[in-house]
Image 1 (cartoon, rainbow, N blue to C red):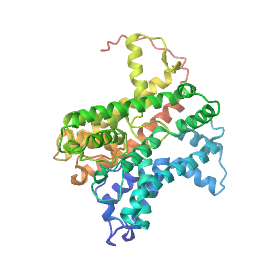
Image 2: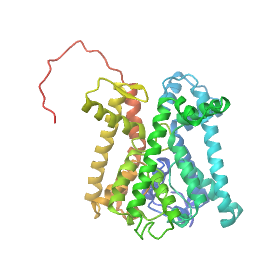
Image 3: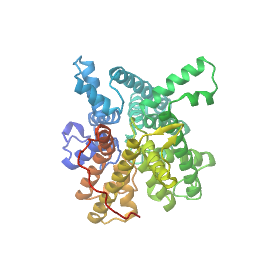
Image 4: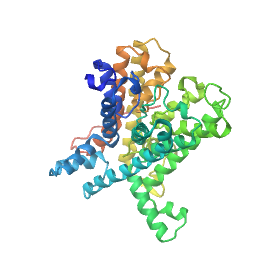
Length: 427
């Protein structure tokens, strides 16, 4: 809110400031003011710090600060960090924390260097480096906030370097740290042993295999569907060259997974693409990463639970590993609660603002899944609408994660009292 944070030196209102702070810390990307023109350099630095902290996770960042300042970690601190990273044990958790920060710095530096190839000649050395660093961190953290203007990456839709680098950063941030480390170790070992790619993939742990398989499938299927649906739509990719159509379809499929950058106006998409967007945004990225949504593994296990019930399987198997009953229940609960939250918030939004259901639902899913894409609605919302979106962004960032931690930490207590079974008719 303070004057030094705005470009004109004036105070920024409480609600717009709260909105910007929330969208930054929750790495969403929806904004009610133009970040590029409204905020000063200091204001943008504050936003960038919030993005980085939100992307890595507040507990992770605080733990790293404690580590740097040589503060002692209590058992409770280690357990909290263990749960925030969704680990089975707290053994080696501090080493893992250091490795996360080192690898994140490497990936973001690489992304910034690639952006600089285009941005330095375009904007000059100082501004080009600043734009490169900001965009790299924003893309890796799946925030979708940019400082170019009010049109996201639409001006770069025909720039393969910018588009591909952004997709790389989004996917890397969305895969999750556990997948990174497993892939790194197995690939290094595989190269040393001269294994072919198929054998290396088989040596990945089951979580990595599942994340990579679902992520790849979602990106390709989403890109194909959007390519077909938008091929002749002159308001999106219809006037692009064939190669640009392919790249932008891939980009849309990737950015829908909680990144929030846009290469064409979302409000101009066909109804078919809009429905695909609902689904892809709801799913989001993968666990223990920077992405939002209910997560790829969660939606997969929830669907697997349905299939197992229909088949009357006594156990659920994926990649030759049995999925625990607790994980199946947890996945179903997270998906159900997330869907229910979206319905309630959408009803609240369309009842307080004169908007249609399609745009309202898009806005709520985008906010609650911390995506950041909009059909041109965010800036026109009234006070009630802005507060609803703030709530959606906040719940979207902490909701599924908090639920996962809660159910992971809950243990069934034996009750000596047993009630008679009731006769209930379901379905």
